[in-house]
Structure formats: C-alpha cells, structure tokens
Amino acid sequence: MKYDIIVVGGGHAGCEAAHISAFMGASTLLITMNIKNIADMPCNPSIGGTAKGVIVRDIDALGGLMGKVADASHFQIKMLNSKKGPAVRSLRCQADKTTYPKNMLKKLNETKSLEIKEAMVEDILVEKNKIKGVVLANGETIFCDALILTTGTYLKSNILRGATSTEGGPHGEARSNHLSDNLKKLGFTIQRLKTGTPPRIKASSIDFSLCSEEYGDNKYYTFSHDDEPKYKIEEQQKCYLVYTNENTHKIILDNLEKSSMYGGYVTGIGPRYCPSIEDKIVRFKDKERHQLFLEPESLYYDEWYIQGFSTSMPEDIQEKMVHSLKGLENAVITKYAYAIEYDAIDPLELKPSLETKLVENLFTAGQINGTSGYEEAAGQGLLAGINAVSKLNHKEPLILKRNESYLGVLIDDLVTKGTKEPYRMLTSRAEYRLLLRHDNADIRLREYGHIYGTITEEIYENYLNHLEEIKKLKEFLKHTKLEITEEIKEKFEKENFSIPLNKTSFIELLKRPEITMEFLNEITPIPFKENTQEIVSIDIKYEGYIAKTQKEIEKMLKLEEKQIPTDIDYKKVKNLASEAREKLEKIRPISIGQAARISGINPADISILAIYLKKEYANE
Image 1 (tube, helix red, strand yellow):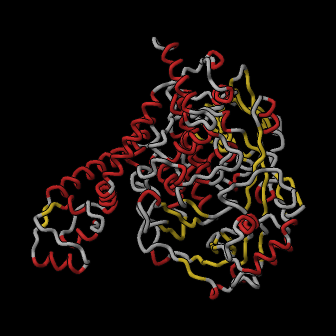
Image 2 (cartoon, helix red, strand yellow):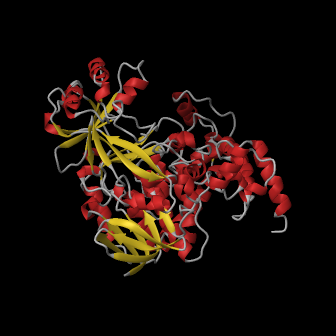
Image 3 (spheres, rainbow, N blue to C red):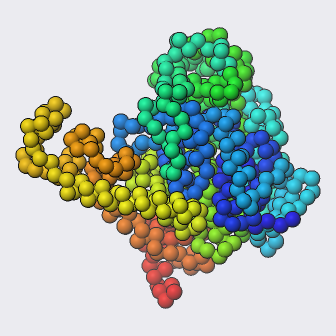
C-alpha cells in the first residue's frame, strides 16, 4: 500500500496535519494507536488561553479544524484580558472532553482522500536520506512519499507518581518503545522532557458553596471566522475558583522529597511556564496562596479538573493536598495526578518548514518538537501538513514570519533557538504582538490560505467582502461629522468627556483614548458588523504604535531578504567567533535575519557573515 502522506499520531497535531494534507488533494493515511483517542485532551480540557487563543484563530484562518471543533464543543467561553490592550486579548473555552474528540473524528471522517488506521508505528523506512514509509509493530510495511510524525508524549513514556514509575502513555495506554531509538540511529538528537496533569475530582463530592463562581462572558464569541455561535449565553456552565492555603503549602513542603521531581525520580525537564504545584510553592515562597480553578471535564460525566494543581506526589499525599482546599475537604479523587516523561527530538534539527534536516520529506509536529499545549501542537501539525504537500508538489514551503503569526514566532523560536524544556507560547515572546491580534487573524493569514489551497473559494470571497467592509467603514467614519448640538453636549458631559469645539469627524473622535465605538453608536448607529467596527477602532486608536511597529518590521524584513545559500561552508568565513561558526553550522539559518536571532551570535559575527555573502555570492 502506498500513500502520498502518512501522519503518525492522532493528537491535535496529527488531526490538523492529516486533514489539511487530504484537503489539499494528497492521499493521506492517519495512523493512531487508538481511534478513541483522536484529539484527546489528557491534560486541561480547554482550548485557547493567553496567546494560545490567537493561535487557534490563526489555525482557522489557514483552514485548520481546531477553532470550528472548539466552537461546536464548548460549554463556557470568555475573552481573557478583555480590559487590557488588544495585543494581549485571547479567547479561552472550556471544551467538553467527550464532545470535542467526537466532533473532530466526524470532521476527519468527512474529509476526502483521508483514511484512518489503528496501529503502532515502530520504525521508519529511509533510503538515501529520503523517507520511503513506515514499519508497523506487526511487521507490516506501508509506503509513502512524505511522513509527518506527531507522536505527542508516547515516545518511551513513563507515568510518575512519587517513587513509582510505570511504562505507558496518558491513560496508562501502551507507549511507543522503539521509534525514538530508531530516530536516534538515523542521527537525531533525542532529549527527555516532562509534563504533568492535576487530579480529577468527583463533582458530587465538592462543596461548591465554599468556592467562588466563575462565569462565561455575557457576549457571543467564536474561534472560527466563518461560523455563527452554537451556544446560548445563559446556558453556559459555571466554573469555580479556589485557593491553596497555609496547610496546603505545609503538606507539600513536609513531603517534598516524596515528589517524583524533588525526590530525584524525574530525568526529563518540565515546563517552566506551567509548573507543578510543588514547584510553585518552592519557587514562590513569598506567596501565601495560589489560584486554582475547578473546571468540569464533560457534561456527560461527574469528573472535574483542578486547573493549576499539577503534581507528581504519591497518591496518599495527593489525598491530603486536595482535602486541604476549601470546599474539597471531602472530595473523592477519581484519577490521581501524575507526571509523564517522554522522548523528543532537538528542534534545531528542523528546517523552518518543519521538515527534518537529516531525512528528506520527514516532517515532525507537536510535542515531539519540544512544545507543550494542544494549540501549539495543532498549529505545527497544520503547517507540517501544508508544507509536506507543497514539497511533493514542488512548491515553496509556507514559512510564516514573526510579524505575521504567533505560529511564525513559535516555529522560528524552535528552529533558531531550540528548547530544553517544553515550549509554551506567551504574548511576551512576540515582539510584534500588537499586530498579532485575535481580531485580525484572517487579515494576516487568509491570503496564504488562498495561495496554498487550504480554504474554499466561498471562504475566500467572504474574506474579500470583509476587507471591503473595513474600507467602507473607514470612509464612513472619515466623512461622518459630529454636529455639536445641546443634546450632543449632554451626552459628552454625562460621560465626563471634553466637548469638541468644532464639527468633528468620527475618525478624529475615535483617536481620543476615551471615545469608543459604543459611544459613537449611541450618537449615530454605525451600520457595520461588530467585528468590523472592532478592527477599525483598534487600527485608528493605535495608528501611531502600529506605524512605529511597521518601521521595525521593515528593518527585520530587509534582513530576512538576505538569504544564506544552503551550500555555504562556514569554515571558509574568516574571523567568525568559534561559537558562532559552530552554531551556524548546526542550525544553518536560511537568512541573515534568522542568523541574527541565534543565541550566542553577536552583531560582529553577523557583519562578518554579511560581508562574506556579498563578496562570495554577489553574482547569484
């Protein structure tokens, strides 16, 4: 049997990779160990969050599935940081752990040219450094032209609780015992990483009256740019807020050596920005309490998740920790927390297209690349799928720049700087985050979707209409003038706004920090959609900042345009620092811009390299 593309792993990266490959016309096989675990959420049952919510919007703009499936599967949604600036706002929803995988599987089953097979991949076939296929645990060989590995946390994974270590993946399922060893034989650097998850609690055993209620937003939102909301605001499920206390901290500190991490049983490196509760207590000793969220996993069963309470303590200590929390004194633990160790590759061995440097037409995406989080995995899977098909079709890969998408930042960080711990996307990692907003993902990325054939013509037409609406609204605001009548004066006085002295256009009024679209709508109803008004309002209010950012981007793009030939011999570049030469040789950046972002390479090295390229490759 032969396919254009084989995708190994049915997690969030695998689902996006398989779907987009097949959508683009490639015959695709998705191989997963258990079809019931398609798009599983072994950790937090949510989609989105700070920066991550924008990634989901980006995925949707490029034709991915995560946003649409999340919209059809959640029971609470809210905009985080809604009272802060637009650069840090992100959607987050509580997805139903039962419904989300079912809806994703339905989408995959509806995708033409895509087959799904239950099996364990033990090895990959490589001839002359080019992928040829995979070998299954039963000895069967399946051939392909391109392969995408999205193995999640299953490579030689161990479940850890205290001093107890059990071979297995999430849910105690079978792990992949040989694939990472076989990758190592091909020359890949294998590193050991760790992540974890909190205990699950029987909801009927929680005294919610002692917890603070957390509601969804009283406003409709969607991750998808194309779908209407599928929920009713008043029917959203409540979540709850609780805190650790002095007793919780004492239990943890008194038993610290029993933790897998602090007892020396963990060899993998855990995520710095999503630490275990024992790590939080040790690192932030000055904090009297830590915030925790109680969130339902599904509306179909009686199990809740303690967000922020990840631990690798033994089960008896977990009981004491949980029972120390207010409202959980009699809580019944249905599933104990655990840490999980697994193998991953060094992402410095990847090209920006997510194709490996060692084996042609072999792509990797998700936690195998050293990332954490469903959203980061899904975004990588989407781009790996697009680029695998593009490679087979002899097209240039889609490499998003740092000013275009959080996915561009994520992948550039991975392939340029590498990571020794599970990488998590943060708004602070994106230097151009004012441009990488929730509201403008389609404006940033839909054109790529059209060029690469990842969206339908109908979606593209809707996008063009959206651009036209933005243009019309700006004209409307420019030409609509505010007459200063007594009634208008009263409206301004009521809000304590200074009254304009002369007849003023709406666009000039919007430049004032205190004036909002909502206020202008009270004066004269603005006949444009709310999301169009939001984009235009941000563009006008932040015009100066955006212009300044664009100038910085222009400088960055000039460096990106200075390509570095793939056959360059860095040994011939005289006067380079030895560390710079070593890193350039290993990472092999594609441009001067990327070279400048490599840790340990200073401006003098970049100047030397630029002069060398100008001299040696002037006629190319």
